[in-house]
Amino acid sequence: MNHTRKQVVHDILVSKPFTSLKELEERFPNISSMTLRRDIEFFERQGDVIKVRGGARSMKYILSSEEESFQRRLSENKHIKQKLAKTASSLFESGRSIYIDSGTTCIELCSYIPEVRLNLTTSGPNIALALLKHQKVMVNLVGGFVNRDNLSVSGDIALQYINSINIDIAIISPSGFSLEEGFSSGNFNESKLKHAVTEKARKVVILLLSDKIGKTLPFTFCDLTSVSTIITDKPLPAEFTVKTEKLGIQVLVTE
Image (tube, rainbow, N blue to C red):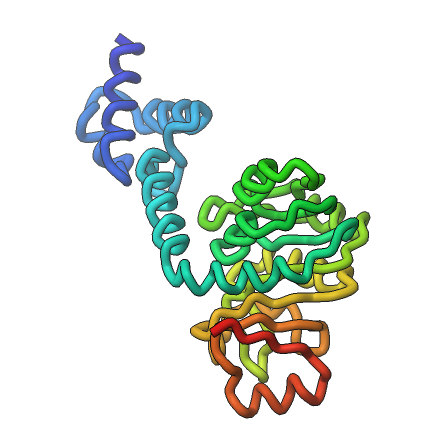
């Protein structure tokens, strides 16, 4: 009977995005709330659900939603991202230690890596896998917490790793850029990692989609003084150009 109840509870929990504890209590009036909570915790350990306040969320729907979101971002401005990536790859020289940021812009780099000996480090597990097709490169994946939303790794372990290596060139893709707040992202841990990379790298190359200009997200990871090169798809606005020229920043426009 206990096995049968658990199976029914399981079927209910995975059948839709969210199931409330109240719903389970109504479905099983003779079972205590404590027992039903234990059932939720059991299926959480199995990886089927995530326990949340008032009930549980189905992992099937969480992963499906996140995959759809990532795939949608991957297809947005794809041609522009490819042009930025191709230009960035022209900066790669044999024997260099290069860091490649996570995200849908940087993953396009994988198709343009020159067939020379390179030591590549990335915080994107999907990027690391894509880089393995290049026989002459050594691929290093930063360890730590994996963000399901954009397939990036960050956290204290990632920071320790970055602090232990040398980086010739860092390829970074921001979520926003303004003169007032600099280059920013929407995730605190990822912003800390990007900041550590920009501090460690000898040369920082920013892949900047023009639609990110003028946008400010919560967490700034660096400003123009940390940047060597900006690769973008349209000429920068006049006030940005004045600043980059004053700082001696190379701006490459791909349009």
